[in-house]
Image (cartoon, rainbow, N blue to C red; front, side, top):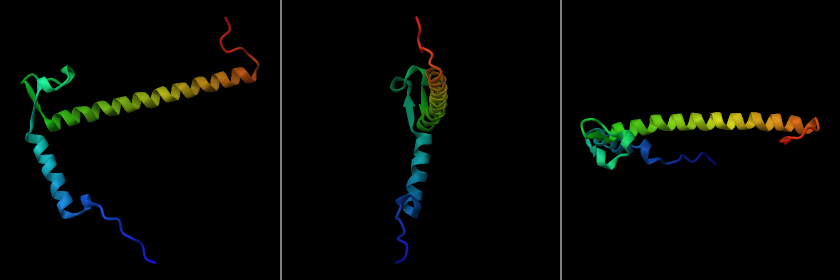
Amino acid sequence: MGQVEMYRFEDTIGGQLIAKLREEMSEVLEVPNSWLPESYHAACGFRSLADVEREFDSRQVDVVSDHVELKASKAELIEVYRSQVERGEELFAA
């Protein structure tokens, strides 16, 4: 039997046109400050939807990197605790 190709709408001409329309519309749609958290407010009273999305994406990168850093520090602590237990030491001696 041959391979079955997966149909993905975003790979079609129609899908590409819809993606381009969404991109162009987000550049012209204005989001008023009253709809946004204060940290997203713009001096002119509004931002384009594309600006809001870019700001959100940049903040998500920071959140992900903070999460990765936190997981690494937890892993380090677990390793320290494991070695203390193996040596017979108390973890939280008063």
